[in-house]
Image (cartoon, rainbow over all chains, first blue to last red):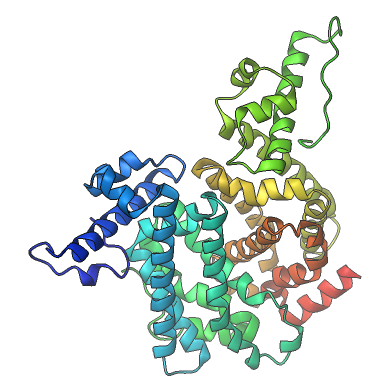
Length: 227
Length: 219
């Protein structure tokens, strides 16, 4: 079974955890993993609690102990995935000591890697979240807003900074998510990492101009052919 | 058009053929769905809402559509077909590519600004209508890729643009328009036209020329 982002490392191999708290964590993790897989396979609307408890190998009572309904389970999944994604992307961005374009490259690379490693969760968050009602759609919106501050410093590099539209960062982030989305809809998660150079060029171009953007995109370590 | 107000058919001998009546019922159901979805959103809309709006029976609904999703898809295709025509008409064959591209984009934005309910149906509710419609939505947006790709002929540098340039550009703008429509700001979509025009053109003709063309076209 696929691990939920951020949860895998907390589950040591070997005997199952025995404490009640650990067991509750494990139940939640299994429920959310099952929710992600089922939603990725068949969509949010078609997914039932019965399918979730079967896939997660828990009883109905266990499901309802943690979540009121499938919406709440899905929102919990979205929150966990969004926090994990923001953490991984921001850590990669902050950890890169080079100039801003390199930081964006590091953050974008981490995003594509995470999505490639967890295609079900990525699909549930990107493809299905907008379909699952206003609260889930708001999570999707929050994801776009979370990435905007990482791109904004690029404005300092543009002599026409005052002419750039206020919405540029969210628009650019949307373009990248759209292309990730397309790969996930086509079932081509394995091709996600190879998007790095071109998605990076797309993100940098409005700030640093096309020549610099293309140069950065062609930089060492950016031509990832496959995972 | 899906949003046309269609009254009930007059009772009794109306002189319409059986086929005409059937066609009319289908159109009324599609218009009924568009109205219901505008009022309640796709998820909350029931078959009863649609048949009430259309003033036809459930039996007639199921004779025309397997369910809500198929009816929505029919409405979506009608609106998309209309938008496609508007964009084609706006892009005058004699014009240069930048002017054509920008005129087509403007026609789409003007339509969305004038028809906020249909903007919402196309851009927002289509995402809520299940995986089949969501995939169709992506395919529809991708139809514009070849028209945008013509911009690569504008100058040598544009030929080396990454293959996903068109998808990223269209996706970015479609998501932005969708977020505005979801926030009830579709009527203001016409105002973002210069922004859209510049964003579309910049990769192909360069940022400075794109800003210049966008300003000229917006004037």
